[in-house]
Length: 103
Image (cartoon, one colour):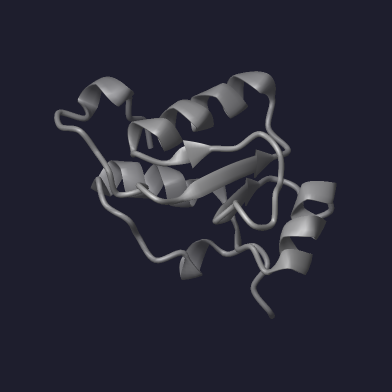
């Protein structure tokens, strides 16, 4: 899917109240995700803090941030969740995007 921030024609706030941390991304990808989170009204957090973070977007299930998130009960999602939310301009269920779901 390719979509630029310029294609959003109204203020978005569906991530208002959500704090999102990321793990395993290059600096360029991290900045893009940060911009997308903030565009949608969310808060980007650099460090994993259990009392603050709502979701972790991760590429690596073995990363320290991911391990902490799982231990603290923070849902670990693929970045596709954020892309799909932005594409649909609304909050989507996290269930199909969970990386730490019990198999």
